[in-house]
Length: 329
Image (cartoon, rainbow, N blue to C red):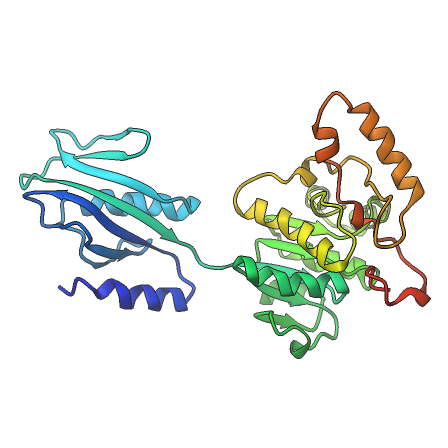
């Protein structure tokens, strides 16, 4: 048995973007065969590469690894002699009884290594390009879907599809998170392509008024109303964003929150009017007035401010002469 086999296997699994857990022996009390510092890579199907002790400890380790790979959270476990094989949650450690005759106690740390999460960005706009550049910096793989797109235009993307036809996109991609940042260019087609992926989270970079019209059109055209209702628009967290890069950052914040199992404040505030007094498109008085009413109605709660949707996302269509604006023309 090569105790350092885990190094090779970890590299292989990570290169293949496959999940696994790195299990390390923290402490060992004789007569266990595992020693402090021993390590192994454990896969979801129960294969163990490396050494963490004998067969008595392995069932508890494999069981805990599978749990860790479901939620991505590390765990510390203790395997100790006992007449019963019950497990007990002791707060900072999960203890398993071991009825093996060999005896000995092991404490192990189980660290899940998850495959990269893919964020699909639909559209070729200033905000879309900024998202594609930022997302890899927080560990996300990026796929781009844009009609007529060229891979050379998106050097940070892992995948670039040059068609936004829904059937083609769903056949070629799988992605838990999708941001539609078409900004006036094939909005409806982009939204249909995003829905076809059946993502866990879907954000649409648009003003509340524009989004309402397009979402109604989606339902009228035959899209599932429940799926359409889960589209978050306006997208992003309230950080006062104005430039395409700042808007991309605010949207990416929501994506990261969803990835980590936390509910975005922008999702909670979906029904509130967007604050558009200082958008990169020059503001929208109507939206600002609506936001003021919403804020006054909710003055009793601090959440009335923190849950207001991103001000810079009132991305209404702008005149053709404004193609250089951050709204994408």
